[in-house]
Length: 132
Image (cartoon, rainbow, N blue to C red; front, side, top):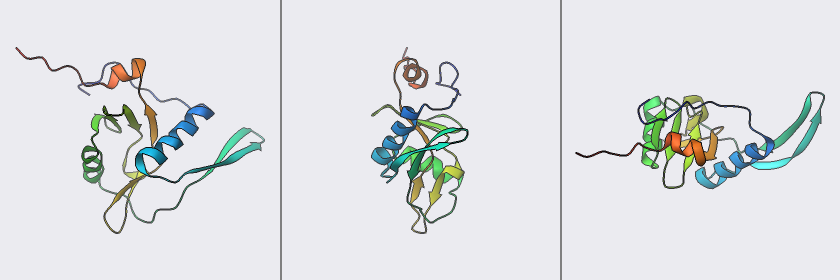
């Protein structure tokens, strides 16, 4: 997509990165995710969280776009948005990870959030506007 330098790829988050995503969801989107603890399983450790259920259905792709644009985001690629004001990068933003409530509000959940810095920030920053 125009305006993206380099290639954006996802990878599994470390436990601290996952907890940071939850903090950002609570802070930036008003979520109420709680970290409950750590559970030992046969295949490794799992972080245990809770999140309030939001009744509603999937929004349209247009409603998702309107939600992000209204909140100051610029689209980076099909499922990724960036807000320069707070360097918030939002990935996996598609209709299955947002809900439209009966009141018509769009509520995000299960998004991949991070505060972009370094090479990632340079990759998603808008290219400079050249005037001749």
